[in-house]
Image (cartoon, rainbow, N blue to C red; front, side, top):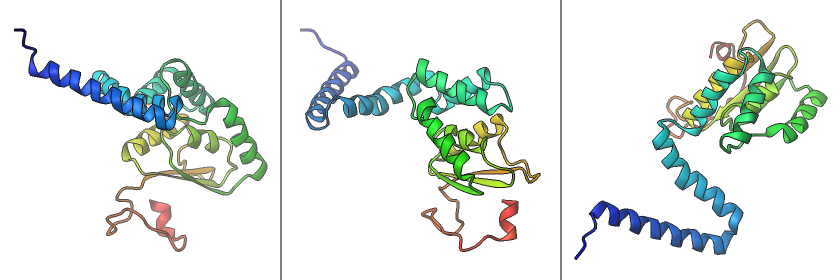
Length: 197
């Protein structure tokens, strides 16, 4: 009688369970959502393990290798190219980006709050169009994404220049408010101490 190693049996059993789950989800949500879920929650973690880094880190490395430092347009083009040619990642993209550009140019906000940064694409896209003296505040709940966003903003040359031209801040929400374990807080007013943050 042939005996399969326990690890092989576990892998086959896991594969069957995942297949059944996928079929049940297909029935409920349809192909589109199931394929995105399969990619993000099954294939992506396996790919990250094999590659030794996350998709977000791979996007950053691609930008650092293929974009021109200090050139926001070059950074956006490198991210778009990566997402079109290498692996899918959520980003505004060229088509919707033009809509964002038009809104920023039309309204010229002096303060802009971005909730959720992912890899910094939209932060770079918006910051490059802001007027002198404007502020872009970006809050990201995932500290790893916030770190990638900060590096992206710095590389694109739209970071906090401290010379009155543009102020871009990126915060990881987790632990952002001392003494508040949930990491949430609402500032009541602008204080001079915030300038040093």
